[in-house]
Length: 410
Ligand code: HAM
Image (cartoon, rainbow, N blue to C red; front, side, top):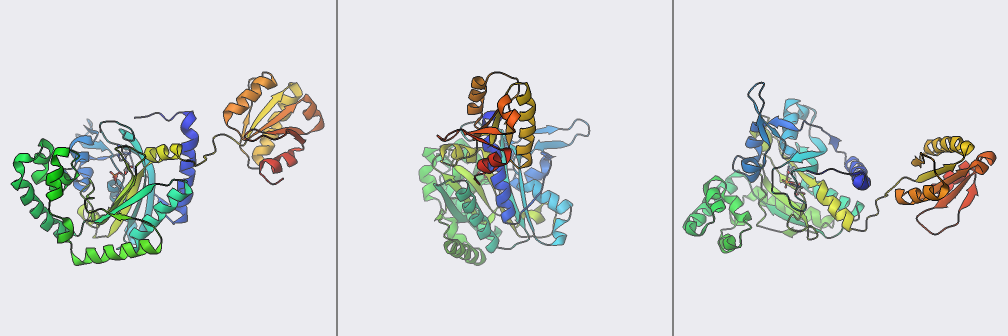
């Protein structure tokens, strides 16, 4: 679990602002659910035999009433629970989004933490595939807005429940035939969650996985048609993708189209964003049958890419205001308020000291401009403005002129 220190705060804020504007551009509305839910909700929705539920949840018994609670490992289950509980679908299909901390007791490594943050989007009540396409087009737009390239889209379809049941039976047979060669993890999963065996990272399992039957051969007509239509929509929108028939996802609630956005700049934990359809989940946890799909992205992983990429997140305020002298101190405080009134962000130097040491602070603050006032400026009601991020002359200007200059209007 990490502390986000002030040195990184500007990147978080840049991402938060960009994401907020992006979600608004597609008409998604926020939903905020508690970080604690009943354990049972996650067991039912994510699946009892998944890694998340089996070994990654922070679960405890509430001593006051004996209830088992868990810190949320993801956002979809709670979002669907809230939608059912508050009857939101009564008003029609819902486009929802959230941002917040999630908790998984995993072995920490680069890009994998025990408390991490997700931006998630859920669309409930839409049968697709138009909405699935919307989600993928929208992700592609976010990567562009953030200046991130090299994020590739892997796409697959899992088919409907009966297709998966047919496939599961064939897969179990294949694995049983090779049972002696299965590693301990795969043996455990063989009957509980055989699809997860395909995800095994153990090189000794590679051959068995490669020889396994293919889900594609069991797919139902409707899922196939929907998948074809989704691909056509992506081609129309010039969103590039690769079909990856081995993509199964680690949560049980999926059916139909599923996907992961991956970057080779992230090391082993290469997925920045993942999601897909979960048409059975609303009914499964007590609502009316409702088609649904969504995705979530890992904020920490996006930040790794942002830091590595060229995206210029503004690091500091617009202005660092330097002031020296009794009259200048009072005048500077007033000017700072005038600049803020005009919409600029201003760090007002506090704590005295000479101009030289103040200028050092202005530089390291990351501000774009220094606005300098001495008693001289105070007496003539002007300021001196010095750009800090480019080589340019310091100039004297009225406060109004300074505002125009800093806003790039002069
Ligand atoms: P997920 O694949 O488990 O899906 O997680 C989504 C994303 O969260 C991952 O692609 C990754 O970027 C990030 N993430 C997951 N675990 C960690 C971790 N330990 N540390 C850092 N980042 C992590 C879900 O959670 C689904 N609820 C997505 C979804 C929404 N499907 C439909 N709607």
